Amino acid sequence: MKKKAILLCMILFLTAFVARAEKGLKVFISVDMEGISGVIHWEDVSRSGKDYSLFRRLMTEEANAAVKGALDAGATEILVRDSHGSARNILPDQLHPEAILLRDWSGSPLSMMEGIDETFDAVIFIGYHAREGLPDSVLKHTMTGTIDVFLNGKNMPEAGINGAIAGYFDVPVVMVAGDLGLVKQAQELFPGAECVAVKEGIGKAAKMLHPTKAQEMIMKKTKEALLNLKKVKPLKLKTPITMEIRYKDENDAARGSWFPGAKRTGERTVAFTHNDFMEVLKFFMFAH
Ligand code: ZN
Image 1 (cartoon, rainbow, N blue to C red):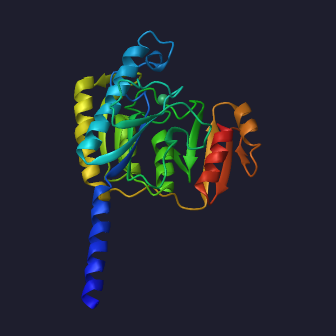
Image 2: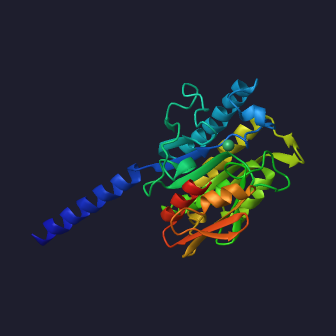
Image 3: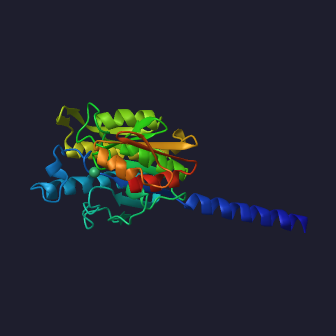
């Protein structure tokens, strides 16, 4: 009887072990457009721009490079979130067939991270760009382009806000591709993450990698990042969390200050503090 019980325990343990081994990686890829290699001008990333069809194809190809790298590393579930403008840029029929594509905006405070939850193992940012005012970067801005966003006093790029959303669900950002300015910030925000600088801003000009080269590097670095997942910790914000928005226009500060619990902290600044980052994100959704 005792032997039987031991055998049963061993079988149960092995079954659990095999099931765990079979559950491959679940990867979330958020894809913006300003940081795609080749992109230099707002027309390139606007649906009305003459060359938009070229750049949405390059955006799709960079997303595919990350998908291929993830598959090589053993990913079994990959969600690609189109995160730019209309969120209807990536060409659905040209995206790698193993990826699920998330398009358009639901109105959720998760925004560019819509679809993320605690079941994911890793987050990857493709086509990302630096925050307003940073050298070495291309089409630098934060969200609407009319604000700076500070989290616990730190001026955050979109990658920082979205990395904190991933961190809220205990998921680390392991790979970031975009302009050099963004990559420098990403190395500070996500120590140990792999990064690919696909272009280097010089004022409003930029030196670019050939898209094929950029895609090769993204595929390689994504695979490396996912094979060394444990190197990177999720970005967890210290509580209480304060978000302060600095607007270019005073009128926007007046509007933002109406969110329940928000405080006008200056002529063009509004702040909101809460222990739950999701509540902070609701403020952000209202106020920007
Ligand atoms: Zn964008």
